[in-house]
Figure 1 (cartoon, rainbow, N blue to C red):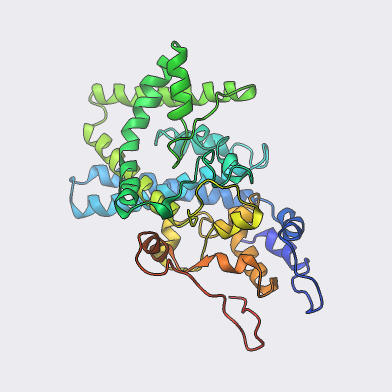
Figure 2: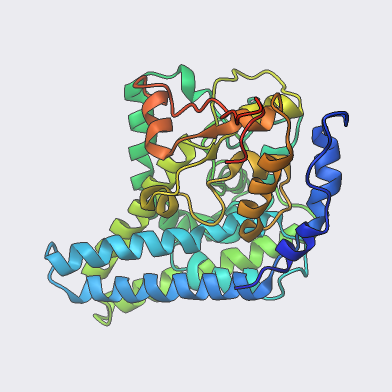
Length: 372
């Protein structure tokens, strides 16, 4: 599909002469951030296709004998497709109100409620991860010094997220409603049980102003979905095996995403405040175009360093912008040092095996870095 942002990019200056000063990060942001706008057609078609494939595969999985080849294959397809659909929550966290009318509501109905992951679990908190004064510190909900952890602790970090689906069902279906009756429970539920984090010390502040109604609506909808399914299972309308299949697919989504998270940053910072360049250099772009990397890091997640440089750029424009920056930036540009080979290489490096997928920027015949 044609992306109007690509056409706009052609009108921007891409190269500088040898005598021209190197562009600063602030300069790049000024010149490129507003050159890209979300294309609603791409967003809607991508989301609906992912949801359609995902829930169809889920239906095939539950209709097949548990553990059969069809069941396993359909479960894998459902996990991959619904992972892609789920990752759109990240786009929601960065879009201005009104830029994609109805998209968040549709996402919640098709993805958030069925998976017990309403958008309030990420929209509102994710902005903290991008604040220069917060990134990489103990106040960052999405950063911990993983590079200093033992292998065993990292493995536990990945696999324990498989327990989240039933925990979220309990949170939204039981603890959420009860928390409105008991203020101490409400503070616990909002502070510690309502946000997608990797930093277990993070405490979500209580919603204020317009967010109070937003939270109430999404909590009520998710709770209603929970009890509707519970009633259907009790009445025999929905076989209990569906719940097990839901847990398997939900756990698969979270485990794959947790592995992908390991390849998003270097995670070497131990709480110090980083400047813009430091934040960029702690973030990772994945060069690999392998099927594994594409499936595990969908919706622009391969360009995480670029996303941290320009958070408002829509996912469908990141690949084009990445290529343009590599064409323009000089040899010493920090951005060139954010590239790694692929997810497996980065994760292996974090575990102490290999070089972490490090790539030395390539030089062309003139001694400058090649664009690729």
